[in-house]
Length: 305
Image (cartoon, rainbow, N blue to C red; front, side, top):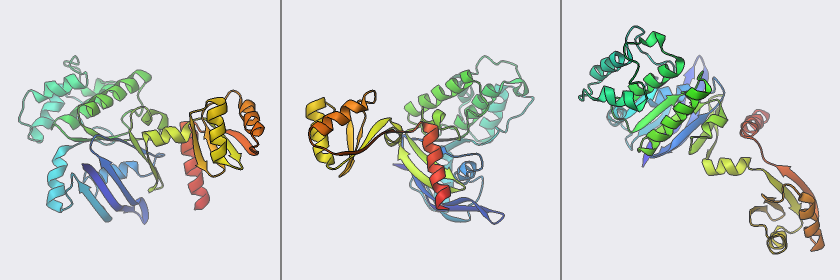
């Protein structure tokens, strides 16, 4: 089931597109990561999805609904924490949640205690929100987003400013919520952090969607390998299997192979191929760190512009 689908979604501020013709789909069960630098358009995209901002053009579909009435009804199934949580400084965690429970018409009085337990804030007692740590404030914002039993959660930079302990706690919470059946859209400019939770990714730069990929595709793109250019890739693959017992490789084209073994001894690999009459034109180690991969994608886009 498609939870959120956008088609050519566009939002313009001051003559400049903050979101520029973005088309993507988020399926039920995804932890979908929006990757981009500050100002890339991640927050604007989320505000469009939650109706906090109106679109200038393009289409939005929520839970299969595309009509105005259908989208309005479907938004009741969304919980969101976008930018700084709008909470009362002089109220406790419980008082803040009780206010939002009544405002949103959530009937169960026990729901406040439930979400406090989920985000591990049951022991804050009479402590006022203004005295919370940043991590506690983020978790309370998340608790507000969860009050109405959402099927779809949207988090904008939920680990921003958190210490290492807070980041781990937030990451574990996101995974736990997803395991309970909640679809999640999460943004970050820190690819390494998203890589530990997301199942799918979209890279956004200057309002435009540059690339979408799955967790497996990202891992494959960043995995270290020996890239070999030969005169006959099919024959080379057969030699590697029979002579060297190599199983982890991918034939990229008729004359190029990526080998995920023998990284410690590429010379032996080259020698074995030469012994079987296969001409090796080039051999080099490839593969990026997650940060390098993101930087390369952005760099390629700049060259095209």
